[in-house]
Image 1 (tube, rainbow over the protein chains, first blue to last red):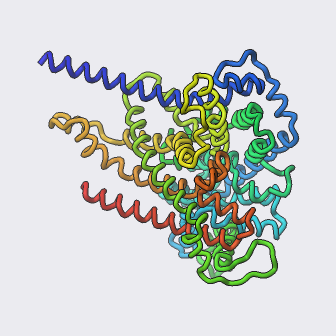
Image 2: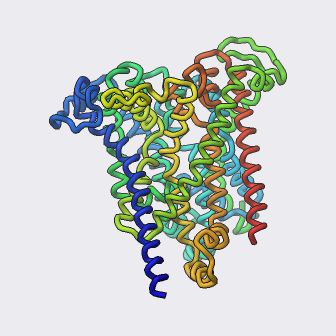
Image 3: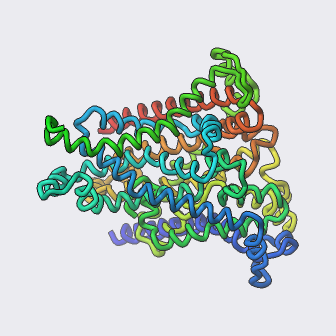
Length: 284
Length: 295
């Protein structure tokens, strides 16, 4: 009996060591990429080509100053911030409100059809829309800031209505009814009673779309290719690649700079970000 | 107005916002999608006044044109191999991350971090790592096989693109699997343990049925995301060398933007849509049957 316990203990310890080895290995695989990208932002061209993974000789911010002063860096950053914040601010109210209207009238054929219409589009790849959309937006004069922002507001309806609709099913209908009895209009009831209840789901949708818009590349590339002044950070970073092929220090610097805001967000709102990227399936 | 009942009157207040949403969505999503379907039957180049209807020619081209079919083949290969790696690897990581270990929170935070970065950004970082940094290290250490870039050969580039995708794609499924592993009741596991079931049997009979919904979700989402891959290709190989890593998403973009084959591009996107449908249907059919078998 004692021997069996001892062998079990040993097996458990072996298992634990194996667990740590695997986790540390994967941490290194992730870490070395991030380390390589960050560390080379502090090196000059010649230094990093000699010793890519070595620590920098000094904390040199020359690359940061260089990128900061490049044409279009500042405008691209401001554009990305503008599109992201504007679209997300609208999404935060618009998507829950549309879902609430659908949810309250689900017995009506029109609202049911609307729900199906939005959610069924989940299976349609963006590639189907990509080419005609760019042409169409150009034709109606929306290949600009306003146009991309509209797109960034409209497309989140697909996942947003799906998620909110699922969430609202668990909210008793009597909650809104009680507000009506007290004389509230349907939208007063929404903003005073339902919207606060939906907060966790709204947070999920806000984060999900914040990250999506911040990182979005293809739509911005296709719609804003006429005007560099309106382009976004991902396009700035990409054009960097073409122009300065050899200077990856600067490329990495631009990448690190563009990742700082979302990294700070990740540190503070990890719970909501995990929920957002897993479609609300996991609450942190 | 007075003839309307209370319910009808209340309902009227809900119409405007849903109608606004419907109009916007139709204008900016459905209308372009219909255009796409329409042009997929034409040889339109994207800007001239005239075009001809070519029937199903564009669809046939997807399977007969060498470059196009090549992109279909790469896309399917990429999707199958990537998901065959992502699912077991992320499940494995999830199992490790639900053990009682130290620094659990730190490991989880680090493993999820790649998910918040853009595919383009990571593709560009990896591009430099594979093309410059690793060959540089290889030269310094005198290790032969590290000296040439993985992305410079046809097979190597396919492997490289898949590995980079794997690096980032593990994050989300891992978190989803952690959640579903934690939903397995501990009593069930203990009962099986007392009955003498080994770790593998316990995993198969107790844990796996709880994982089925997540497994289906990860597969459907993973397949969809892999079939439309674009950013990594743009960032790393631009389809090369010699078209070895041209995905359908990249090909469609090229045809529409650079090659004046608008109609052909639209037809290819329709085929891509059909492929997503078929793959998803197969996965859901297979997983549902499995789920019933296990009950």
